[in-house]
Amino acid sequence: MSAVLAEFRDWLTALIPATNEEASGGRLPPDPQHQGAVAPRSLDLHTLLGQFVAVRQEVNLQTRAVRAQQEQSAETLRQLAAALDALSLSQARGEDSRQQTIDEAIRPLLKTLIDSYDALALARREMRRVSETVLPFLEQLAAATSVKPETPPSLWARLFRSPASLLERQKRDRLARDSAERVQQLLSSLVTGYTMSLQRIERALLQHGLESVPTTAERFDPERMEVVEAVADSGRPSGEVVEEVRRGYLWNGRVFRYAQVRVAKG
Image (cartoon, rainbow, N blue to C red):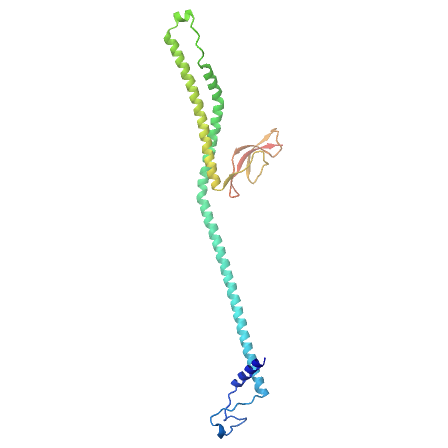
C-alpha cells in the first residue's frame, strides 16, 4: 500500500512542474547555491482536489467512451446476427427451391414408372386369368393324347387298317401333346416375366421415395383414397375397403396419387 501511495504522490508531483522562478502570486529570486535547480512545489488541498476532479472527469470520459463502444459493438453484433439469420433463411429458401425444381423434374419419370407398373400388373392379371382358363383344357388334351400301352391289333385291324393311317394318328397325338406342353410353359414364363418386371419397378419406386397406400381391409381414408363404388351386402363393416381398383402412392409422406377403392356400404 505504501508503494502505491508513493507512486501516486510521485504522479501528482510530476503533474505540477515548479521552478525557482515560480512563487505564490509572483516570482522568487534564484537561489545562488542552487543555480539552475528546480525547487519542488508544495502540494496543498486545492491542488489535490483539482487533480482529483481532473482524474474524475477523465474517468467519466473514458467510461462514456467505453459505454459507447460497448453499445456500438452490441449493435454491430445484432446486425451481424440479423445478417446471419437472413443468410440462413436465404440458403434454406434456395435449398427448398432447388429441391422443388428437382421434384418437378423427376415427377414425370415417376408417373411413367407408375403407369408402366399399372400396365404390367394388368397384363399379368389377364395372363393369369387366361392360364386358369386354358391350362385345365391343355392338361385334359395332354392326358387324352398320352401314349398308351400298345395292344396287339385285331385280325380285322391288321387286314383293313393301313399302317400309314396308324402312324399318322400317333404323329397327331404327339404333336398335340407337345403343343399343350409348350403353351403351358409359355404361359408360365410370361407370368414369371411380368412378376419380375413388377418387382424391379417396385424397387425403383421405393428408391425414389414412393410407397404404396395400404388399402386392403383398411378403413376408408378420404385423404388418401377415392371411392369408385359402394358395395352393398359385402359382409364387411361399413366404410371398410373391399377391393383396390387402382393403387395409390405416397411420395416422401405426401399423396402422389390417390388410391381408387371399392368400399363396403352399410
